[in-house]
Amino acid sequence: MSREWPLWEVFIRGQHGLSHRHVGSLHAADAEMAVLHARDVYTRRNEGVSIWVVRSSDIAASSPSNKGPLFDPANTKIYRHPTFYEIPEEVGHM
Image (cartoon, rainbow, N blue to C red; front, side, top):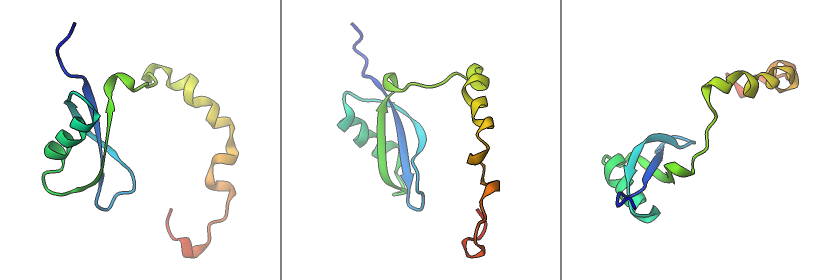
């Protein structure tokens, strides 16, 4: 039996950001401890407004080698591209 604490991935939302970004990893006994450690390690200058921690073992990801089969079907859905919509001038650059 391993006595090492589980690995957690840390995501921080910055003061002016709308989304969380991955900032690193750390070991902690549980989620509460992981949040506290993440605060201490990754937000020392008061730059974060929200912290997410996720056990690394719970993350499922696609493989870069599956890029073609996974993403190619989206190319046939041309209605998803913004070229079919008129954007009002007051919206500005998108």
